[in-house]
Length: 281
Image (cartoon, rainbow, N blue to C red; front, side):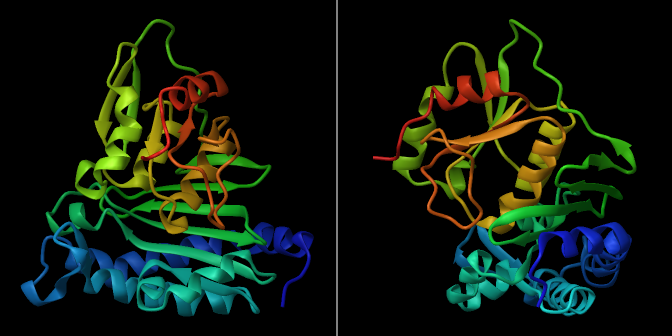
C-alpha cells in the first residue's frame, strides 16, 4: 500500500500520462462507440426518470477500475456505479489507501440525448485530499489535467480562472431543477436577484472546467457526491479559483459538508455567491 504523499507525487510525475491514456482508452472502447447509437436496452433508470445509467457508464467504470488499480498497486477505486450497487464502497475515500474517484460518464442524460456535453472524471485522493484530476470530454476531444500544487492545463495549455468583469451580473451554474427537491430549490433562491445570472447546470465536470477557463463565474450545488466534484474542484483551485461551503469551509470529498456550496473564479465571487445561499429547510 502507498503510505506517503511523496510516493504518490513520484507516481504522478512518472505515470500521469498513463492515467491520461487509460481515460482516453476507456472512452474510446466503451463510451464513444455507443454515443448516438444507444439501443433501448442499454439505458436504464436508477432513482427516477432523470437519473439514468447506460452500458457505457458501467463498462467504462469497469475498464477504469481494472486499469487504474493496476497502475497504482494498493489503490482502491470508488466509482459512481459501484457505490450505487454498494453504498459502503464510498467510505474508502476517508481511509489510508490511495483512492481513485471515478465518474465514467458525467452528464449521462446529455450522453443519452446525443449531446456532446458529457465527460469522464477521474481524481486521485489520499486520506480525503485530492492530489490530481483528469477531466476528459471525449465527444469534444478535450482533456484537462490538474495536479495539486502544480497548476491546471487544458490540452497542455495553462488554465487561469481570472476574475469576473466588474459590474457584470455573475454567471452561476446551479443544481438542475430536475435533481433538486423543494427545500434545495429554496436554498438557491437568493441567486435569482440583481447581480446574478443563474442557469441550470449540465455536466458538473464541464461546469467546473468552464469556471477554470474563466467562461463561468461560479457554481452553486446542493449535493456532494465526490465523483461529481472531486476532479473539478481541484481543477478550479489549481487554476486560481476557490470553493467554500455554507459553513465557510472548503468542500470535503469525504462528505459531511454544509450545503449548498460554491466553486468560483476568485474569493470575492465565492463570498458573493455563498452570501445568497441558505440551508435547505
